[in-house]
Length: 368
Image 1 (cartoon, helix red, strand yellow):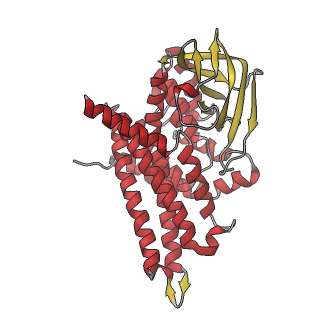
Image 2 (cartoon, rainbow, N blue to C red; image 1 turned 120 degrees about the vertical axis):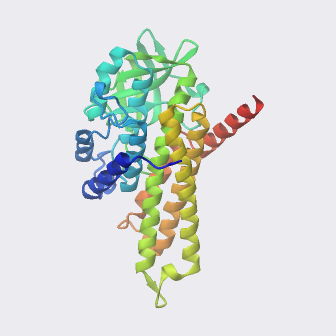
Image 3 (cartoon, rainbow, N blue to C red; image 1 turned 45 degrees about the vertical axis):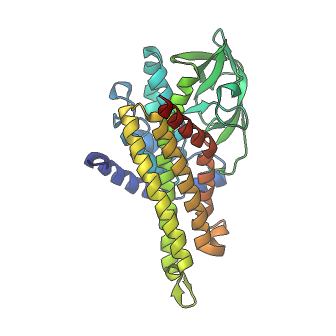
């Protein structure tokens, strides 16, 4: 059995790696120093290449690469540290509309989401805490939304927001045009300033519920699927950190020797390599489950997410340590990967949430 991606998708990977090496180098640093929230030129290129609409069918303007194609692109984007709203728009907003939207909603929003002219975001959190139904306080009533959400990743740069809200006693997902007057947005500070984070206040904003997303189970389904895509992005970032650390360890001299020849460095990099390969195994299984819409999507997504969080956090921290004093300086990119690792580790719930979700699924399966 071949667990690798197809030859076509591996060719997409090679082309994406080459493109990002040319166009995304320094993207995170430019976004961080400018405070723009994302690299608009790079985002436009991604739209033209069909990356943003990779998992969107061609009938809605997508490139039709499917879920596995989106996984491949996510890994390369993570490797390059590209500062774009790719995750918010492609992993979450687009998937919510595609999976739960009506025919009219898909026809209206998916073409723009596919080419990047519409940037989407996902608003679930209303402060600190794991994703849960009890944490949803925003209210949808008669097509009007009231409440506030924070933090919302890419909330300041997005045009369309998928919002979790209460419609009576039920949790729903609703589409909100963020460019209407009844929406107020404010920037929030975060550990990774190369990624935009916002507080959004809805004051009677016009909203339209996604008919297929009624009940918190729909939110969980969206998160389970997004967990695999985030895992690939984290996997790409972790691999980049290992490559940076290895290259530096082979060049840096101490006591007349390459520092990579010392056991302390070897052990660090070996631990990172093992964590990455474990994360890769879980992510690849998650990619299969995502494409097949497998019954164990919950466990596949959770396992991929937990392993990838650990791998990226470990790789980014050990990359700094391998670089020594230079690793803590602004001029080196080590801190940018560390910041991104922390950002991604909390983007759709932290490791404890996903560990509990994995354990809960296993207990439920064993009890059946």
